[in-house]
Image (cartoon, rainbow, N blue to C red; front, side):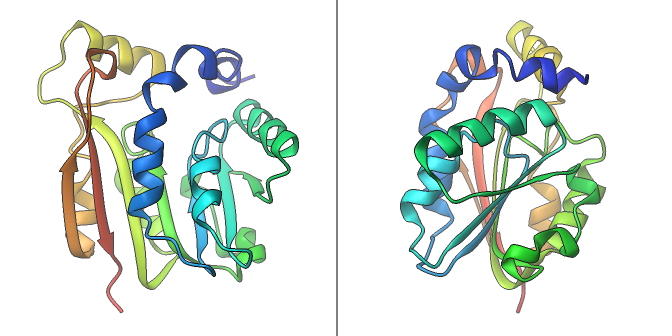
Length: 204
């Protein structure tokens, strides 16, 4: 059993409250349409599902991917209880392939990476892999926390999430995207740094 499988037991009770507002803002930034095909990775316990599905039309599709079976089990439980239509894939983001996105035809037009860039083992490599699954003209939204200098709370966030919040997580998207934007979000001491939302479109 991996670290995030154990983390899933208390994630919602101890952490989720600090990111509820940010998940809604992330879903709004996706600029969803009636036929949008969304990839949410790492989807964790499904914290973004409700906000995303609220903006999806009846012909829209949501795929959630995560490397943790424990996190996905919690996400599946939420989806079942709410009768949400979500396709869940157990895979590390770096290894996610078009074949595993069969329900959306092998590619998506919306990519959400929420609190993933600071935690991926190989941030640049994983982003490149996920970016390849976004079709030309598609929109990518990243939400993460950043600080230039770690304080006590930042160190605690890194320890708890197995993350590195000193990463300039927006740079892989900034290098590749058109119409790049970077916006500070409401932040609190518990975040350990500044919550930030960035968006960009894949060149057509």
